[in-house]
Length: 404
Ligand code: PMP
Image: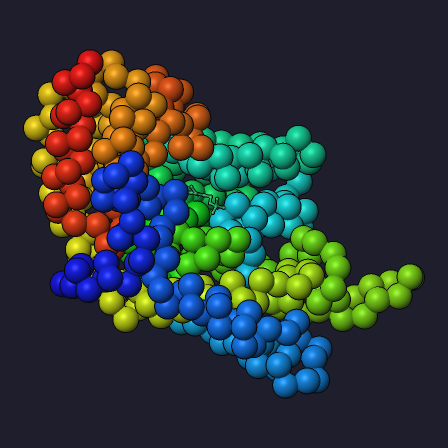
């Protein structure tokens, strides 16, 4: 499938210790560690190829520009977008959703029109819509979930009506691990002529994504969750939408011409990339995509699936454990609580054993509210995790439990 020992050697941070114990990093849902090649790409960018891109006649500017545009084509290929200009570089998932929320609502929505989201959404896919609701009087409709943490598809269908102008749903839940039936969601929405935005923050590192096969209208994700740099992300949007949407930010690069009387805007993708972009970040991001592509997204998905199943089986043996998210289709994360041990206590004590997990509401407070809890302990997996690390997690949780 994949050679995890060889992969681990590519991630220098995995050699370090925490509190005198070997680091066991199980917080990949928050951010992933970086392989050497990605960090070296950043170094190479600044040491050898640094110059502001576009508009430069000198050699370095042209080299930097070409690298940035190659990065765009790398992303295009990675998600199988039809055109490179459908790839907009942003600061991450959050900025991508805010861009669509602002520009799409401006162009295509009127007061009382509706956006459908779901109970399991990350705050990044709730708050941008609420901001628009405040400003423009649009309405949010929220799809229910069942006790396993799966979307209630009948409820979803029942929410679609003539006021529905957009569906904005996560592909994989960062808390529950649920893989939502995104193709089915898109097909249902399209049959009512409603476009769909997919929050791919948690799917992109784990599943192969083909935006054309999905027929997604917008697909957004962050580089740092797929072994790339922070502060870099993508908005994929179909040309037919992006072309009609107004710019989000004004400034340099996004204009065709400016006078004090009238400004005309640049073509895609530049219309949405105001200011100097993170052209070093984009090339490092492309390096990360090349890195995972060389391993193979199918191999990654299969390996992580095996890890997840192993972890679920092993963790079931822990006394008084409660899982949050037991969907049939699940990826990447396990959320749990043990007895009445507070999630912070569990997280802090696991940390003393060198085990990094995340605790709290995971930026999904409405979901926590729905489940009647304040937070969970979350272990989330990446390509470098091993069954031995899962054994250590299980032993760690058991040890912490025995202290209470
Ligand atoms: N959506 C989901 C499902 C996420 O897991 C995250 C990150 N936790 C985000 C959105 C926001 O990503 P970022 O902070 O990189 O913008």
